[in-house]
Figure 1 (cartoon, helix red, strand yellow):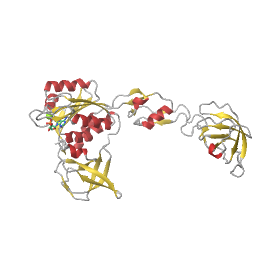
Figure 2 (cartoon, rainbow, N blue to C red):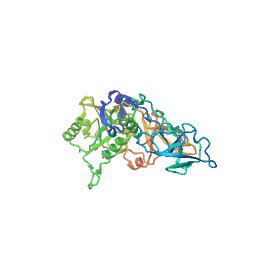
Figure 3 (tube, rainbow, N blue to C red):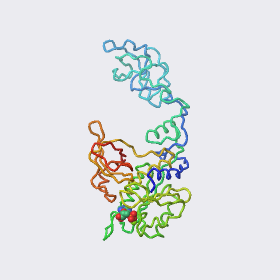
Length: 402
Ligand code: AMP
Ligand code: MG
């Protein structure tokens, strides 16, 4: 049997980053930049007011206080967007709004709260040292500065940064398009009626949602049955569109393991036993020379765990990101566990932070069909291949589920 690490290493060795694509800003969200982005101008581009108030000469208000206010003539209003035609000389000031350009001559802003708010004349009750409440040109970013490095995954704040330096389009490795298909003639779409021997298809939903959670774009194709010709046609049909394909079911040792049957020998597909629980039967390979295809086992918990352990890192690799695992913490076991020798065991559990430390309780019901235990868990407890028994209080590694 192959180890989890060997299987993941094979997957990552085969997975090539997607080609860059130039997209509009909002389409770039969760994409990974393939170019460094520099600022064409200083940010802020000009000295501007940090407050609604009055642009003054600091020397005029040096002695201002509650008990000895200073009176100045107001030459006009400067709003954000104005071009700053005013000039301030001693004894004068301008009413100014946040973000408006500081007029020539002024070297400080007095906030409106420290004045009587006058429009022709204003009484100022507070001194302001030179530079007070002025946001200097270039104090955020200087022209030519790299504001985002190549390889940055774009979140909301990075999209804002791009817009702030005037970019409308950027080159990214886009979110991978993941097509999810489930096999099984027993499967019925949720919303339909289950007859004898039938169950609702949950894998295609869980895996599509997991792909979206992992930062990809999930496309659910639903169940494609168990008929070999139809299964093969349905998978092949997706290859032109998908960046990555995930199937569930039909890869174990049964008499009708259709996925294994139709994909064996195609591309670089390999069907193997991986030393893990749940999720032993795994298939992976490239079809059409480029599209990674993951054929995950059918049991819902097996499919889900396999996704987190193998597909998630591959999705990161498609975007050229380091294939890091789920966020991992060390926790103390709240109850003992037993684990099979020779397999890496991913137990479903409930992780809590209590009294300054993490504690984790293994879920009741560790069967690979037990969706409820999975749905009420927030982590996977990892028990190594060589460990067969752990006691209450022992330290374990825990993968936090998204
Ligand atoms: P298989 O690997 O196809 O033999 O499936 C193993 C187990 O997982 C069987 O009990 C299937 O009914 C169940 N199963 C397979 N696909 C799904 C699915 N999409 N949703 C829920 N259960 C499934
Ligand atoms: Mg099946």
